[in-house]
Length: 111
Image (cartoon, rainbow, N blue to C red; front, side):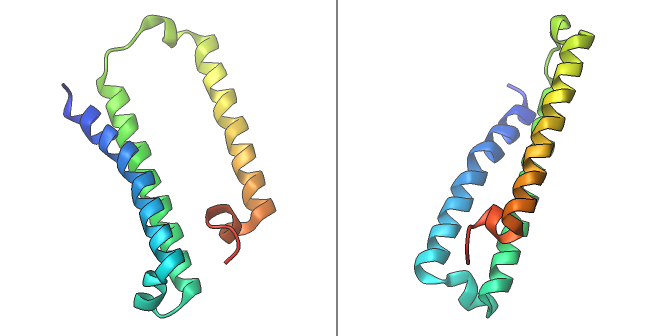
């Protein structure tokens, strides 16, 4: 099997487990807040960690996809345009949630 596939699978599985464990630990014991000295700064660092891990996961997934064999049916123009439309609609929903909830609300709810 391709090493890129294993790395992508690792990050796909690792990221949510890491986020959940760290968020629960922070919620119950305020570990990050204690280490950093500020609840707000701990939240911002944790949120940026989530963004960084998501970026690494997406990059590894893209590398994995590029190393896999291609199916010619999926290379047709209408499939590619449909993919672009879905990505743009997802971005619109993501931006709307950030505008509506704010940075803190989008990641951890009220702090």
